[in-house]
Structures are given as structure tokens and as C-alpha cells.
Picture 1 (spheres, rainbow, N blue to C red):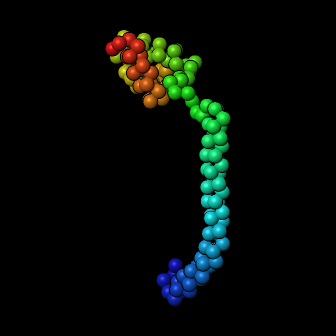
Picture 2 (picture 1 turned 90 degrees about the vertical axis):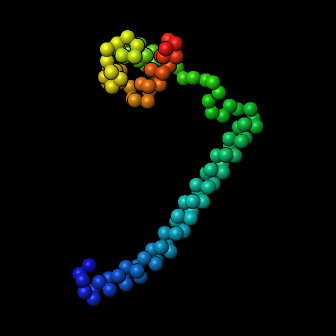
Picture 3 (picture 1 turned 180 degrees about the horizontal axis):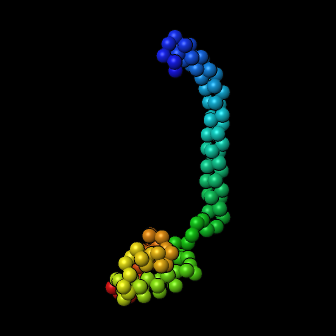
Length: 117
């Protein structure tokens, strides 16, 4: 903005140009929302049809994944963590194992339960 009468003209032009743009964009958004709603509806119908046909939807309750890295990581945690028989802090063991914080504490909790600590 320049600070004089030209500002009023520019604001008027911007306001004038926004109205047709809004009229053109609104139908596109409405069409997009309709497609999303249709997709949700078809997905839920497909899941319901699969259930009626006896298909398993999602993971079976109580099932666990077998992760190859889990046993070696737990062994390192047990060997090096101060809470078990090691000399390293939790942060140092996380760096050593390369585990994320949440995964590290999940494995540590499982180890404590296994060892009845």
C-alpha cells in the first residue's frame, strides 16, 4: 500500500476480483467434499458386506506381531540398562539399540514383566 488514494482503488479492485474467484472455487470444494463423502460411504458399505460374508476385518483380537528386532533389542536393554544389570542410562541404551523412545520403554516394560521386577 502506498498511503494515498491509490490504496482505496486497489482495495476496491481486490474486493471486485475476490467475488468471482469465490464463486468459482466454492463448487470445486463442494465437489471434493461430495467425493470424500461418497468414498466414506462406499468404504463402510464394503466393510459391512465383508462382515456379512464372514470375513475378518482388521487384526484378530489378542494377536501380536512377531518383530525380528525385538529379541535382540530386549537382550541389549537387559544387558546394558541400569534397571536390570547394566551401567547405562535409558538415553544411552536408546542410542545403543537405535530404538525410538516409545518402543524402548515398551520393550523395557515387557522385560520387567517377563522378569517379574
